Structure formats: structure tokens, C-alpha cells
Amino acid sequence: MRRPINRTFALVALSIVAVAATACSTSTTAATTTSTSSPRLSGSITVSAASSLTETFTTLATSFRLLHPSTSVTFNFGSSGALATQITSGAPADVFASASPSDMTTVQAAHLVSGTPVIFARNRLEIVVKPGNPLGIHSLADLTKADVVALCVSTAPCGSTAQEALTKAGVTLATSKVSLGANVDATLAQVTTGDADAAIVYVTNAATVGAQGVAVPIPPSQNVSTSYPIAVLTTTSNRSLASAWVAYVVGPIGRAALLRAHFLPPG
Amino acid sequence: MAGSAGRRRRPPPLLLASGVVAVGLLALPLVGLLARVSWSTLGSDLTSPTALDALRLSLVCSLWATGLSLLLGLPLAWLLARTEFRGKSVVRAITVLPLVLPPVVGGVALLLAFGRDGILGRPLFDWFGIQFTFSTAGVVLAETFVAMPFLIVTVEAALQVMDVRFEEVAASLGAGRWATFRLVTAPMIRSSLVAGAALTWARALGEFGATITFAGDIQGRTQTLPLAVYLALEGNERVAVALSLLLLVVSFAVLVALRGRWLGALRT
Image: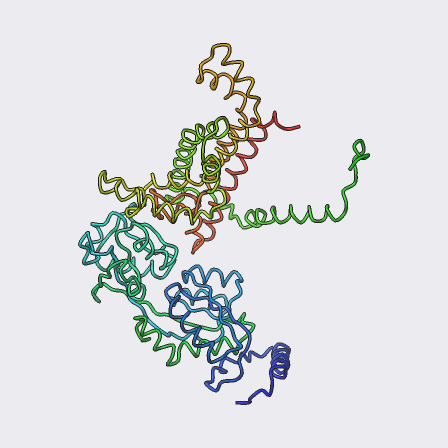
């Protein structure tokens, strides 16, 4: 791999390559530049990431910054469904990390994904109830005892997987008892700071509630897991930094941070 | 400027230009919304169960909030305008605060006061089983909190401007306090009263931040139109746009009605 002598040269070289590539109209998208040799990275990128990644990614960004001091990684956290809509309607983003393959597919269908998305983690569901579990909720079926159950909106992966798990368990919750959250954080907050009796969220979110709630596991037979794909977007203005961030998340440091946050390893 | 009273002056170009920019800034988003409306599916988008539930709930809650604001805000406006008491400036500041407070902060504050763990909410729940959070009553409470200041401020201002001598004459002719208010004060501040109530209603109808924070988002129970718009935007933009259009039309109708019918007399 050739090492650029300095930034200006690299930029000039890149733009020449870009112009040449466009001129020849040959698709030479350099998706293979995710090498582990560390070129001097600089500039900034925006990472659109699922809400459930908020803490892990924020932590990872801090250590990434130590490795590459002249870079900055900013985040746009939200439900994967909303993020996919934002990206396909032209929101500036360099990397997309989704909580479900289907939202990544939406972005791929719009020809905005560069290369192939990589699955970097998996997550499962868990019930969170009020401290002390006053209603004695020990399973999905017990959720019918609750007056208000917080679920993610069905367009968010946490909502569709929760619905799948409820179906698996043969549980139907009345619409009048379900309070919808726009993303997994908003859903969990309805139990931890609000007055909802229970919420179905990811294991990784349930692990963060501390004294504000109790996590009730869902047995594997009823549980649904979701995969997290990550990809560089074609609209990126800083491909090298975007690829480096993806490599960092997929790599050993990212893996360790994800496992520490109770994510499951991919596949 | 002096000397130009009789002649209509051409506006300075710079002012004209920035005025045009200001109008564009305010009008463009509305144009954008209208351009995105899917007219062929508008009917079905607006009559889905979710949309109808949200519409019904929005109307019921905003009317309740307006009624409560009249019931509680009118006396307070009168007290602020007509009487002197210790701490009046503090009371006035408290009444106006929700106007400038971010609604979501209002929602958190309501949660800490009226939630099941709140200072008033806990005894209410423990002793009487009354719960505001995740209830339609909670939506009304949140909307009243955010919207009532509009009524108080409008009516108080009208009372301040009104000539007190009319009331004094009525009293000297033997009219009691209630008769004076009903026969003299109320008719004289009528247009402000209506304008205040309409503003209060419009604000209540559009309430989002305090409602979603305090009352959650339950279809048919707490999911008002703005909340439905927000959730629809997560994945069903067409419905979100349709519901937004509905809110836009209602807001516009309020303005037109206010200018045409009730505020006509105020126009010069």
C-alpha cells in the first residue's frame, strides 16, 4: 500500500483519481482501503447509528480520538428506521450503523451503500419493569397484567422484533395499553423516568437501568435477536476516515466494547 | 420620518430585500409541505384508525384545555390586572414562564409534580388511585400548563388597557361585582377574550413536547395529532405529511376566523 507523503498531496491525488474515475466511468470504488496500516487520518465524519449503540459508540469515539488526534467523529443517534429515511432523503452521513438488516437494505436499495455491509453485533430483547417488580412480571405473558407497556414504534427494529417476540409467545397487548416510543431510549425512559409498568427493550439497554428498574429475561424460545450491520455510505466526503471507523468498530477494540455492553458477537 | 406623512414612500431597497427573505423563510416550509402532499391518498391517510383516534383526542383534549384555561386563567388575569398584592411580580413571572420554557422541560416538571412518584402525584395515586401520567387527563393537564399563559397574558393586557371608569360607573349605579363583569367588563374585552381563547386552543392543539414526556404515546388515550405526526415520520412519511396538512389547515382557519369575524373591529 502506498503511503501518501503529506495531506495536500493525498488530497490532490485523491481528486485526480476521483476525476479520472468519473471520466472513465469505470466503477473503481476503493472499498478495499480498509487496511489496518494506519495512514494519517484527519477531518471529520458523521455516523448515523441506532439508538441502542449510543453508549458503546460514544465510548469508542473517545478511544478512536486518542489514536487519531486530528479527527472528529460525530453521531446522529435515532431509530434505524428514521435514520434510513433521513439518509435516503439526503441527510449528510458518512457511516450508517443499523440495528436491523432491513433498514440497511433500504439504504442499499437507494444505491447509497459503498461495498457490502458488515454484521458487527447482535442483540436480544429483555423486559424492564419498575424497581422491585411490583406487578410480578416474569414473562411476556405477564405483560397483560400491566396497565401501560412501552414498546418501540413498529418502524424501529426494537419495535418490530418486540412484536415478533410477543407473537411467538402468543401474547396480544391491547392498543390502549401500549405506549409507543420513537426509539429504544425513549421507550426505556417511559419506565425508568416515567410511569409505564414495563418496556420491551434490548438486553444492552436493560443492562444500563441500574436502580431505576429490574430486567426480566425472555427465554430463548420466545426471544428474537437482531443483527447490526455497518457500512460506509457513498455520499461520504471522507472515505478514509469513514472506513477507518468501520474497521475500528468491527475490529478487536470495537468487539470488546460491544461485548462489554452485553451485545452478542456476530453470527 | 417627518415630512413624508402624506406621500407613500418607496421602501428602502435593503429593508425590502430582508422583508422578502423573512417572508420566504416563513412561507417556504409550508410550500414544501404542500408540495409533498399525496393528494390521491389523502382521504385514506386521514381516515385510518390511528389518524381518526388522534384527531378525536386532539379535539377533545384541546377543548378541555381551553375550558380549563378560561375557568382558571380568567380569574387570575383579573386579579393581576385589577388588584395589588405582595409577590405579584413573582406570580406574573410564574404565569408567563411556560411561554418561554421548552415544552419538554415542562413535561419533565409535570412528571416530577404529578407523576406516580411526584410531590402531588404520589399522594393522589396512593390515596385516591388517581394517575395523570399515560392518561387523557394527563394530556389535558400538559396542554393547559403550556397554553393557559396565552389566555392570561391576552386578557390581562385587555383589562389593563380598558378604562376602569366604566366599571366604576356601573358599580355606582348599583351593579354588583358579577353583574359589572358580565354586563360591562366582559363585553368590552370580548375580542381579546376570544383571541386569547383561540390562541390558547391553537397552542393546546399543537402541544407536543410536554405531552409526549408526561403522558406518553398511547393510541386513543394520549396520542394526539402532533404525536401521531412524529411517530409516522419514523417510517410513514406520507401519513405524517397528511396529518401535518390537517394541522396546518386548522391553524390557518383559526387565523382567518380571528381576523375576519372577531378581530375585524381592531383592524384599522
